[in-house]
Length: 595
Image 1 (cartoon, rainbow, N blue to C red):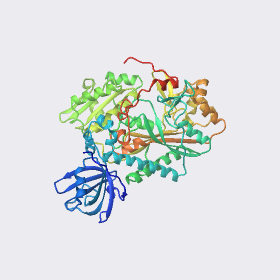
Image 2: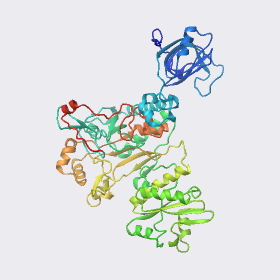
Image 3: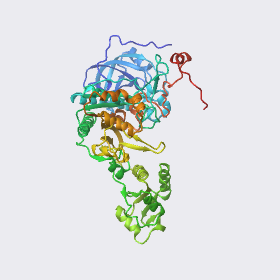
Image 4: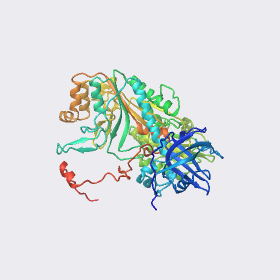
């Protein structure tokens, strides 16, 4: 017989499940049946909503019709219950409401559920594909709900902070002109202008600069951004950033505003005080010490330059690197010799080769002595000189790479992280914020043989570097910076070029012709003809910030409906084909390609 569903008529929710009073009173609660325990003449139902659980109790004193209805309840049924708060016979210390229960006198079954493909509150043990296909069920999981709520709290705290500091929240277009910003655009065909396309914004960059030209001196937006690029654990094709721009400031004032934002978020969302100002490292120092422009400084193991120390050693790998303008550098893995056997070192070597190194030298110092991979090239005292210079001791493992710095530094930076994770020396619960300053303006593209803007072409170079724009572009540093937390980049920002002639010169340095400049950036460049205040800005990755604060492994855990590795969404099965009539209306033909 079909179960007749109830209505809410006559009842209104008075409390959320996790927020019911712990003293006797009447309450009405609503939610999903999390767990049902029927022991004959007693039934307990844990009712769940986004705030937590409360136990509903039914016994031989309960109205028989209400009791019979409780017997029909199964997992994930949607219920509404009215009753009286009373103390539980046995408290549950694992529940916020574990000392009390609701003695139910009115139960409504508002919606019934079929058997779910997995247990909602135990979905952490289910494979990702199944969970993503039934994402609406996985989102009932308290862990994910807490993540989504934390993300909301971060967004609210962000608005509160910037409103308090005089920022105006202004929306910028979601459909704009395609401009080069480092990744492929998602394109939107125009029905009216056949053969023409809008682009979804990779960032609101140009529009927020135009807002500064227009006199709105403090802009903020929680902006949706889109990039058609390969995905990984900390990247989605659509993402959200807390985007801001300020006029009449210098780079230090800009950084100070960002520091205040991070301190406010930590205080409001986690109750943590972070000391300001944040530590700063130049890009060059970060690369030389950690092999990364987003270093994790929660542990030591810094890269050391031993080029001078090994100068007299006729090891071809070392001598060849130095002769070609490179260096010899090392990382000391403290107490790593026991963990890193020869087999494990071979794995590290293969990893190093996979990211650009020609090989990896090492010194493994055990109680039997120091085993050195280039021992046959050493003279008397050479090994002691190397270990003394590095501060290495018995029990340590020394990893050495030799090549050009652009190879050696990131390779040792990657190995540093791998070794720290394997040895489990990265402390939990530590929040190491860092500001990376003086970013390079250009980066050299080996494939095209040209210089590209490392940040974007509107970034202001440091004044002392302007003279080197033509003669030595590789040395030009930008008034650009990154905020980093525990090895993850949170934000990029910079002062912007506002001088029309300098902007033209920067475009030319990037190899853009007059026609390309006009086609891609003409409206922004034209705006500068009518004067612009000095300005700069940044964008904080809301998804990444939420991921780190929640201690999540992936952006998927803080995004309500995420995409997977190939940029598809399993639940709705998008992207999907559209019918021929829609394509014809847009003037588009799909050309089949062989798999």
